[in-house]
Image (cartoon, rainbow, N blue to C red; front, top):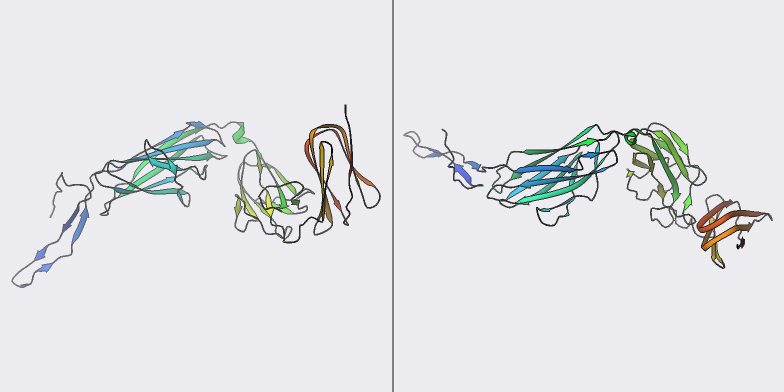
Length: 367
C-alpha cells in the first residue's frame, strides 16, 4: 500500500500508522506495530567562503560558514569541517552567532582531524560561523576545504547532508621551499613563567636533544641547542630525561609527559624546554646590589648541582663609554668585562667551583 503525504502538512509532523486484522478465525482483532514517520520538507542551506583567496605557507585564512534553516520548525544542526592536512586550526579563533549580529567565541569539538559544532536554529533562522586556519609548509597549489551540515528535528526527522567548499590558491614561492632551522634552550624555570629570564633561570648544559629522524645534539653552556637544514613541516623533538632529570613544565607544544614537543618548523623556529627546579635546590646563596651613579649592578651567587653560578645584571639609565667591570676571584685574579659603549641592560654569567662572594668594581669614562 502506498500513500501520499499532503503538500500542506506542517514540518516536523509525526505520521503514525498501524493496521488491524479481523476475520472469522480471529474474533479478537490483531493490531500491528505502529510505524512512525516524521515529515520534513526542506533541507538546510549551507555556504562557505574564505579570505584571502590567495596565500603562502604561514599565512592565516579566515573561513566563514553560513547555515540557514528554511523549515518552519526548529532544528538541531551539526556542522563539521574536515580541513586539508596542510591546514592547521588556530586555537581560540572560532566565533559564531546569528547572522547580522555580534559573534561570540565558539570553540569546536575536535574529533580526529575534524572540527564539529552543534547548535539550534529556529524556523527560517541563519547562523554565521568564522574561524581561522594557518597554511602549513608543503601545501599544494590548491587547497580545498569542505564543510558539512545536517539538521535533526524534535520528532527525529533528519535533513539530507549538505556540503559547501572553499578553495584557496597557494603561492609556492621561495618561502615555501626554504629549509628550516630549529633552535631552543633547556633550562630550570625558577619562577615557572615559561620564559627564560637571564640571571634568574638556570640553563642546563649537556642535555641531550633528539629529533625524530635520529639527529641529536647536546646543549651548550647556556643550555642552547640547534638543528639546521630541516625540511619545513611538523617535527618531533625530544629531550632525553636521563640527561635532564627534572619534571617538564607546561608548554603549548608539549606531547605526552612533556619531554617531547611537536614543533612546526618554517624558516627559523624556536622550542624551549622549561623544567621545574627542585624545591630548595635553587635559592640565592647570596645577593648584593651596587649603585654607581646611573649604573645599577646586581650580583647573585646560585648553587648548582655541581659548583656555583655567578650572575651579574647591569642596568644603566644612560649610555656609558669605555665601561669596565672587574669581579675579584678567590684565587686573587679578576673576571673582567669591557664595553666600548654600554646602554640598557646586560647579563653576565660565569661558573665557580667553590662559593665566593665579592663586590665588583666598575669604571667608565665620560666624554
